Image 1: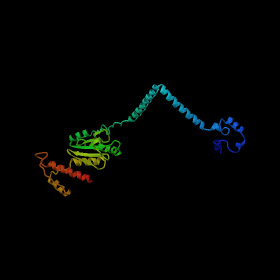
Image 2: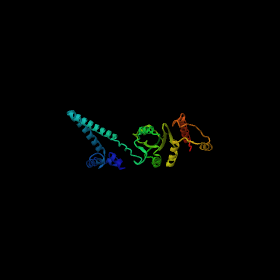
Image 3: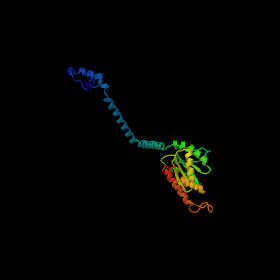
Image 4: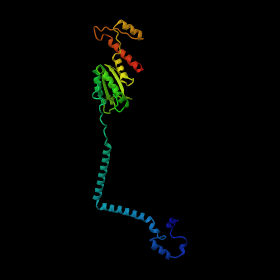
Length: 276
């Protein structure tokens, strides 16, 4: 009720007591209303703040009229500060920490050629210059790639005199492999036999199985040098495809390359269907 009393002008039963009490209240309170209420009212403070703000604007306006060069200098300074702030913010947004360059995935003592920068073009060059090439595509962060690394290294040690093993980092974003290949999983093993391939290996990532797979692709044909071995083949392989070629006159007699390629196609189809 004191707040309602403070907003009133002195009503109630005290209004009939004459002017002396009113004069005393004005002298004590410094304004209309009950004693002490005028000094606590926030309205005069708000009014004085607004007056000071208006007087400040008026003074700045008069100063700008008398000395316009000060207003121009202030505007120029404000523009410079704004441009500096904008330039600083834009520079801060452009600061990007580059990715760390890749490092070798295989040991320097490994028989596997490690193209850890994703040099797919060089891998293609090596493939065309070799008879049998195994390409091991990996991502260095991939747990399966890390686990398969030792198995591939062991298989390469067993077959290094016959097969070229090449590992390619296909995750490095600046490498050619990442830009050309789009694998959905890692690791991936491709095997090439001269111009034929790739034949993808889908078996266990074990050195024993990888070596067995490579040897099958290296020799997709079974050579039968005698009649007894021919009979053994006919009794154990049903159905089987036989071809006769005379190698005494040429290492690749007519029709042999076609027969060899057909054997690779048959092997690839069998492996893609989950064959042994």
